[in-house]
Image (cartoon, rainbow, N blue to C red; front, side, top):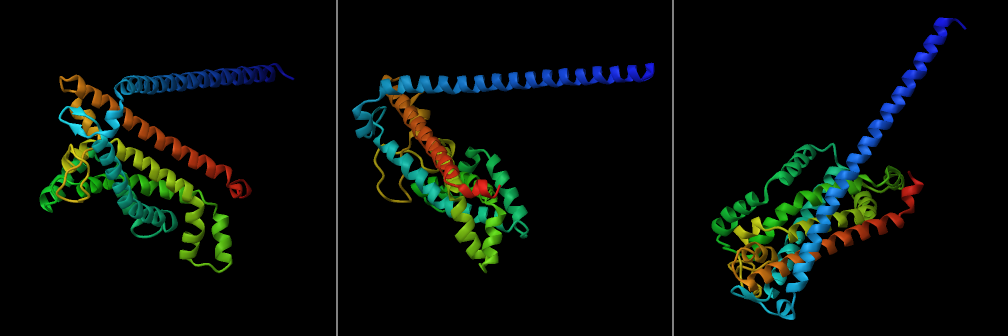
Length: 303
């Protein structure tokens, strides 16, 4: 071996060592930044939960759960009922449209409307919720004469939930193995039978997870409801229009700035209820998704 060959081999070894060191350095830096971001995010979440839980449980009494709001005191029964009515009303309206749009995007991606639907869904996600509330006020509260009502508030929440249900449905359907569809087509099934009988049932847990996440977002909304649902100290009368309704996020927004101890107690209790609702929905969605993954042997078989 010549001297030149030895020097070349030594340079290659040093270059390889240098690349390994740089790779390890970047790996260490990346993991350190990821750990720091996780600690900051986790710390903020824990701090919020601790503060809300401590003040919320301290303000929580039997009267808060069983009585309606009376000025700056009383309870939150009307707000709890209104939150459930508005959130589930919005999901009931958004679910069929979002499911249909998600099926179209996943199963008929080459259709002429697919790019437009996907673009509109992405744009709608980025629209501020207060703009949707203003739209609902102009079109429904004033334009249609519904005034502050359950119908106007539910439609506003449905508009907010629609893109999330649409895109999560599309992603869940795209996770269904192509081999299942091909097997169904080989047995003579048509497009409708394959979609409704194979794809949708298989992806149902993922679709339900998206709907639950949209429900959690609806529970925590305030701005669109200020312009559409208004506020009421009374229980829901059952009317869809011309009747305002209470909700928890309004109690937080309105009562926390009042100079009364009773108002602050209601705001803390309302914050606790909203946090518990969102936390429960998030945990339930994770349980549904993990249970689906454990009971899906075809996922390993066809991967």
